[in-house]
Length: 77
Length: 178
Image (cartoon, rainbow over all chains, first blue to last red; front, side, top):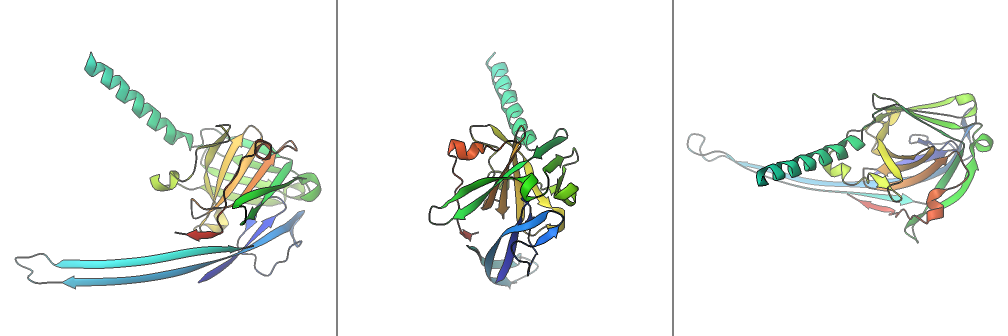
């Protein structure tokens, strides 16, 4: 789970790490924060890794692996 | 004769393909100076971005905003009072599957893609900026992982929003699944 704050400035630029700043705060000469958006992302991973070795001399090792991942981002307005 | 004809067709095809790749590259230095800026608000009920009024940057931000694209695929954005706010960007080399998600042109081929950029201070944060230019008008799309547009902005030297006038709709999703 990861949450971010995205601040939009009056010059149309974005600041991604401005946590704790308020809308209307002046961050440099003439540049103020116009709006802020919060977004969260949740990550889910699961992985299985399996190796079966029967005979090194005559057969190649058998390797099986499965990976499932999910990543969902939600923007809160 | 037929073989020659085929060869010519093939060469035309290759030429067209190479042209598409070249369109995303910056060939010469380019400068856009904007005096007006329009923000959008994402509307999850309409599933689209809605335009706000155009702001006069000389009033709200203390001066115009200048975008400079260099030949070496870097970008500079200067704004604020007396140009005190400076931000630096670098062009992000997209893969084929990523490039397919970013349209090369917008609004009946009027606006052409300059490239997709990352801010130097926030590299690998997952935020990418796509810039579309038509003369002194600039459309910026903010992507959160290429393909998901989370913000749209319009810069211009005139207080007229061409996208709002044409009724161009930018679709919006607030639930992003990868």
